[in-house]
Image 1 (cartoon, rainbow, N blue to C red):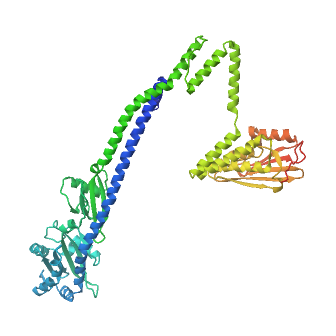
Image 2 (image 1 turned 120 degrees about the horizontal axis):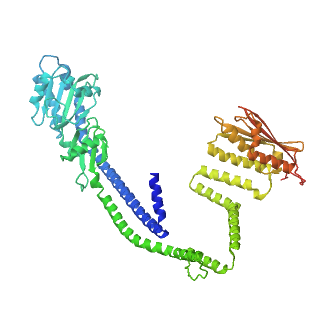
Image 3 (image 1 turned 90 degrees about the horizontal axis):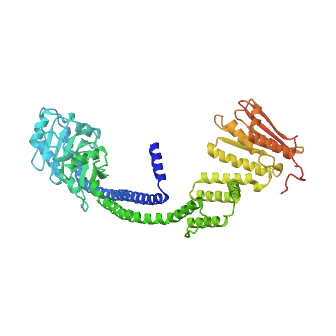
Length: 588
């Protein structure tokens, strides 16, 4: 991968500037159009799918409410028959007499009670009632299914079937099924619900009821929108019955894949919208193929890329002209430089007003006005110019630095990044205190502030590993000392004492007046050191010691104390008054 990149870079560098500008402009144009087309397509596609989903979820919720309205009177009537004393008497007075059917008298009583449901509710196709003594009763408003029902339950106990176990576990609450559960009937034609019949007075189960409903009722409950889509499909699913929908309004071959994708949770081919029905627990679902739904977004993508192709063609010619106009003065300048290199002294080339043209005119003027200079003089001048350039590069304009840092701080505040803003502010303050307007001396207060700003930056870097405590007497804070004598020892304590230490560490700085001297101590609880001579070998510490002795005299300086595993103490002793100054401390 790296070799390919290097080969590509070498190939790029072999081209002239005109070709580089031309290819850069063309590449950026193609990239911008590609990104714009791709983003537009995906945004349009996502928006269309989300709008479709929200719209159809609303219709599905309305469909669910319609189903509730259809089921409510049926459920209410089914529940009301429990208050019928005759029903309770029929179900509770039975006994195991070897006959699977109720007596003729009991059948007439049950038929009279259940007729209110079967013949008054169009959606109800049949109802079955069973007691716990082995008796069964079946009533149908279409005169169908009774024979197969009775034949089946002559040989089977309904208590052994799986639907009964779930019904019994619901203790009297209706349990809805996506297909018929009665033995001997065509289970695909109906949906049903089952219910344990409890005595309303004692709460003791008396029997079981199965009420079959026409599957057509489900289709009539669905509110369909303005179906301009060919692949839009509605279905009702029982999430507990994986792979088989309760209702499906399409028999297309693709619906098998649709049902499989829904139950597997795949959204690669279809956009699904759903709403759950509280009464049945079933979900109303609408699905549409993503390919059909994304026709509009594909149209937007094609339009964008078509326009992009036209723009690329126009950009091709425009880039050639722009690159030519940009590089024309460069070619002129190259020709002039080559002519001068070959000994030409009379330059007559005319340059335009561009930046390169200005350089060419300046070069032409320099050559025409300096023909008399000797090679040696030219060499000296070049050396002087190089020295000036190096000097300029080594200089730092404090005001430029402060203004730049303040600008970055403001940008960080605007963007809400308080940590970066705090770091920039600390760095700016540190530079201001370091440069000190070019003055040699600094107050103790400013020196302490510089250490605080420095430690603030380090704690941002090391995630608050270090604690700094300042214990400097207030009466010496206005005293003036030479700059940059505390921070080098703080840096040394942090890098060599605290950083190798596991966990957090602390640095304590104390300052006090002792007779006519000022004594500062930098104390850390780091790893310590057994060879104190190593502390004095560093350039920064040696520089501080030399400056103290140069400014205050050889009797002043720095001493060290350290114990491995416990920490290091640095003591700085300087006079309160400096040579040539009547007063070292400032009165505010």
